Amino acid sequence: MRRTPTPAWSSVPASELASVDITSRQFAVDPFGFWERLRADAPVQPVRWVRGSTAWAVTRYGDVEAALRDPRMRKNRHDALTTQQPPATPRVPKALASLERGLLSVDGPDHDRLRRLVHQAFTPRRIEQMRDQAACLSDSLLDIAARHGSMDLINDYAVPLPLIMIARIIGVPEKDVSRFRGWTRALLSIGERPLRSIGSVLVFMRYLRRLITVRSRDPRDDLVSALVSARDGGDRLTTDEIVAMLVLLLTAGHETTVNLIGVGTLALLENPEHADLLRARSDDPEAMRTAVEELLRFTSPVETATERWVDRDVVIADHTVPRGSLVLAVIASANRDPSIFPDPDRLDLTRWPNPHLAFGKGPHYCLGASLARLEAQIAIPALLRRAPTLRRPDPTAPAAWRGGPIVRGLESLPVIL
Image 1: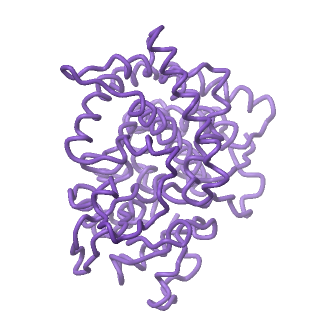
Image 2: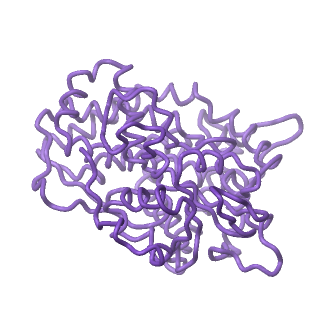
């Protein structure tokens, strides 16, 4: 499948590019034509961000990769802004200030310290031990769908699988898992709808604090207990740091996979010959790994990297981005850059090598990348095996895309098994 740009971004006057709202549902339908236009004509371009703010979109692969590694682009905006500058996005409410002490909000030695401590708990070995559980969970969800003959792929499969998995890893009781989807959605939308979201996020944080207290007294074989006991010499994580880490893992740890499974399946339904190829090779682990890497590139479930603020004037692709500006490294654009990926708008499940940036690059490379890969390598082949005639009720109906910053995903995707 090759993309047909909608709308025709090539005809939009250059003076109007800065007014494009890249967080809208309409934009989510097909952002790739817009990124193609920017790569060609405006590789560093101001765009509308949450609540009418402005961000600088960086779109070419080399510039995106460099931005993800650049120490001048700070995760902690307070280190980038002058005292006279208002923030490019709304300030974090005081009640949520502790979330700014997590991995996504600190730089340099502070980030390195947190990463060392967290790595003691969130290990590849711990993730790999979950492979059999993921397979069993996938089968049980598909058993339920098979009895009905249909399902909403997002809400009945793509959401519960990674959400239950990350909850098990962290140590959340299964009876509480259903509450986490609403909490994580509230967290992702807090920049756009703070008044509607802040209450849910505060309840989320209180729940995690209670769980940390319980595991401090009664440790188990779970991630919360491992984070509580992690030590680096005499150093340890504070409760606020553990809360921020758990919020990150529970949000990013399942949201990326939800979108990868959902949009990846949609791509396969729109390319039935690729679905047949994958179905025929579903018992080949290497073929599955290669296919998932291409789905990561092609769908880019994380559309832009999380926010970075420049701590001085920075020149990118001959454009000067002034100090204090919010920079978005557009992963979805880098992953379709024809200078790196031949015929980039074509889905090719055998594409290799595949140096996509779906999980970022540099010091903030996604901590949960191995978990997302594992879950997709299990969930997508299992679905194709169990549903050899998988289809949408109406293939011509427009897909229900979600709006919002950072991630790109579907609200729902009804399918017939």
